[in-house]
Amino acid sequence: MDRLPEQLRELLDQADLLPGPERRELALLMRGWADAQSEAEPAPEGGFPGQFGMIGQSPAMEQVFALLARVLHTDVPVLVTGETGTGKELIASALHKHGPRRKGPLVAVNCAAIPATLLEAELFGHVKGSFTGAHKDRQGYAEAADGGTLFLDEIGEMPMEMQAKLLRFLQEGEVRPVGGNSVKHVDVRVVAATNRALEQQIKAGAFREDLYYRLAVLTLSLPALRERPEDIEPLAKFLLHRNETEGLPTAKLSEEAIEALRGSPWPGNIRQLQNELTRAAAFARDGRIEVADLELVSAS
Image (cartoon, rainbow, N blue to C red; front, side, top):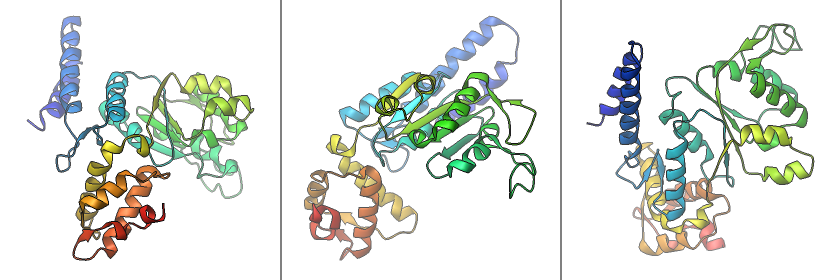
C-alpha cells in the first residue's frame, strides 16, 4: 500500500494521454484521491507526528498543514514567511513534491548567499565573454528549473535592481542571459521565502510593491518554535533519531531535559535546537542527556 499513490500517479499520467473528457475528469479525481492518501501519511521516519515531511502536532502546525494541503494543487506563486530556522525550505519541498510539478526539477537559490553582482548571472545565466571569468555559456537557475519549481530563499535580501529583473521574468516568463541577445521561455512555479517583514521593507523603499504582490499570491507563515511548545519533544526525538541514522553521536533525553527544552525561547528555532542536541549528545554521559548537558538552555 505504501507505493500505491505513486503507482497510481504513473498510471494516471498515461491515462491523461487518452482521448475523452470523461476519462480525463476521472483521472483528475483519482489523482486527487492518490495525493490525499500520500498527504494524510505522518512523517515517514519512526512514526513521528506530522505531515509533508515535517514534524508537528501543535495547533499552530495543524493550521500550517491544513493550508498547505489547500494550496498544493495550485500552480500560483507562494510566499513563505517565518523566522530564521523555522523550516521554510521544507514548505517549498512539500509544495514541489506533492504538487503538479513533482516530476520536474526543484531548484533552490539563496538570494543572500550570492553577491549582488553575480545574482543576475546565477539566476538567468550568461554567455561566454559577458564578463571577466565567463569562459563559457552557462545556464541559469531559472532555466534549470523549467517545468518544475524555482525556490527563491531569502528574497528580502535581493537588491532593488535585481528585483526589477525578477519582476520582468515573472511577468514575461522569459530569461535573457547576461550578455546575450536571445530570450528563452521557461515555465516554472516560483516559491519565495523570507524572514523579513516585506510590507515594512516596501514602506522603507527597500522592496518593490509590485514584486511583492507577484510573489505573495498565496502566503504561508511558519510559527516560531517558542509558539509551538507541544512540538518540542517530538522534534527533539526526531532530530536525535536522524543523527543516529547519519552516524552522529546520539543519546536519550531525560524528562527534566525535555521540560527544559520546552521552556527555552529558541531564537534560532529548529536549527538552533538541532545544533544544541547534536552538541549535547556528543558530551552526554551514559547515553543520556540531562539538563546540565544543555548549554543554551542553561545559559538562558
